[in-house]
Image 1 (tube, one colour):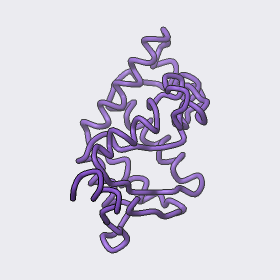
Image 2 (cartoon, rainbow, N blue to C red):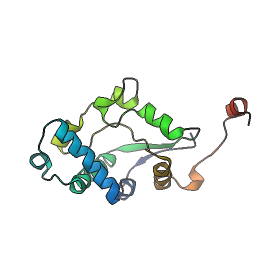
Image 3 (tube, rainbow, N blue to C red):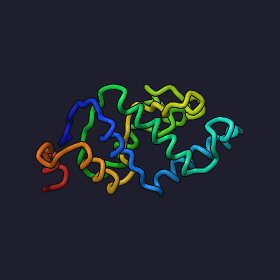
Length: 162
């Protein structure tokens, strides 16, 4: 762990974290549409549209509302395969699909269908960057360079002969 802080997230920071990138919004809306189709629900009746980009904007708003509702603990982890390892620890984004023993599998309880019906974000307890590029962007959103303490654990010398 090279960075750790507890913050009350401002709307501006949440908006920066959940960007308005058209591709991201389209993907987010597409995932939601697939969930509706899987459960044979009508997205127009549920949230008023069936357009992925519009649904993505709606979900983004719910995510921003959730992120700003209370304190957030932000951390940066480093190491070999950090993104993949953290994503396994966090579990599947959808709590109902998360493996027992993962953070989301043990502590998150709401399904996507239930959250959408309540017009709230899926409260999956933890966020984990999905790629190194996303991690770099998100780290820059949450931490200034001087707030990070990069180091090489002593154990690496023994494990990696470095």
